[in-house]
Amino acid sequence: MTTERNEPVEVVVARLAAAQRGRRGALLPLLHDLQEELGVVGEEAVAAIAAELNLSRAEVHGVVSFYHDFRKVPAGRHIVRYCRAESCQSRGGAAVEAALAERLRVAMGETRADGQVTLEPVYCLGLCAVGPNALVDGVPIARIDGEAAIERIAARVAA
Ligand code: FES
Image (cartoon, rainbow, N blue to C red; front, side, top):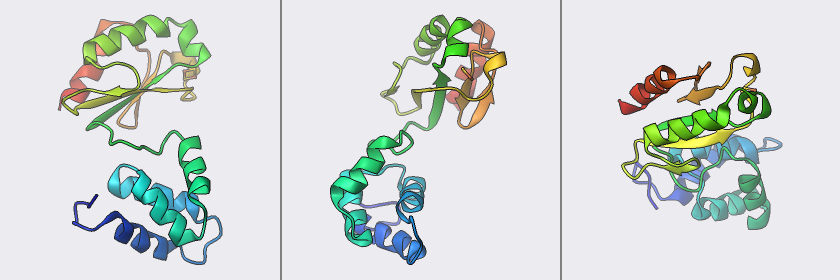
């Protein structure tokens, strides 16, 4: 794999790791930087990070798999994170989720075939009193309680 700058992943990892050199707990910041730059933390990157930080691949892989924010495959152009936690669920969240998934034409946990949108679960956004809620490209959307709210989300991800 090469990047937009046409650098091999190992070169990107080495460059980003150099910025973390000497820092305690460099793994997480490095993973975040890599995710930010490449959009994914793939197997190639795991091996390169392990070599750079003198860790085992299993140690790096364990951290990557523990945190859901690290992606093994690229997300769509837009990311809709829909809350599946208790309060939103008690406000009809399951039915809204089904309607949202149908409107966006993507299953929960998937990216639509055209790469336009990824729909994924999140477990509480701290907006429990105004649910069901979602984050659309990092912007909170509250009170998703009907077709109008779903259409607003669809319009955001259409661009
Ligand atoms: S339960 Fe959905 S925002 Fe808290």
